[in-house]
Length: 377
Image (cartoon, rainbow, N blue to C red):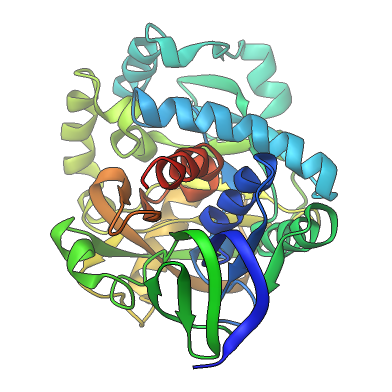
């Protein structure tokens, strides 16, 4: 087999999604010579099919919450250096049921609620005049949002042009046999390798992925153009989010809210629907999402799921007559553990964010992955 490049690298990263790009960045910061191999001509996977929402508040308590805090800081640093616009900051959790307010009151007593606070009635009227039936609104200043379908490409370009990372697109990796990574186009020589396959669980070390109990989560999302312009001060979530994000749903007080939602919105729960609304620079709204779990991705979008998402949007946001301009399907790997890291051979690691929070936690997880390979041989 031919040699793809005469260059030798300290670290080769397989996959140019957000986890792979974050690994390249963390390795660059350590002074390593890095290459990224990607089988597609550009990133087309889960990393661009999301909200671009870097979520800290509500992440699983402990290590994953700390990953989100760290990753948010890195995002802000990298975005400034790479010229990636941060479209808005902050999260507004609008409680529309008394049970939801009780969950947020309990959350405020945890360490994860640092810097979070209730909005006053005046602030609610001024900042969120389009949100209906608010019992209370919890504000977190910790979150930020980028336009993921543009930001991932911008991040890759910056890593290449400013950080000296080499990118090999249209280069499918077939095996890792250090000191070589074997591709359909030839071999690349490297001391270490990190594979970031996302939801591709069958190309590299499939037995290890199956042992981890990883399944596929397929989600649906929408882009809406409001009939009348509205200005979001930040991201918005609703009561359904409080029984989904583990920082809230793990609290004992969440059980009463869950029981009420099981009566009032059973179809939403069955389809894994909860509400996140963010705004793009052109004023359109990205709205989602749903979650369906199986051993493979669901290639067919469901109109019924879209309607459930729209029902929740219209229950929370007073914005009738909005026009749907885009619909899309995303897929990510899902497991009980929110991250999956395994070292199949000395000097190599596989890293997957398995909780649907890659945008929020990738930079910190990447630091852990780089540490793993550097200390594995």
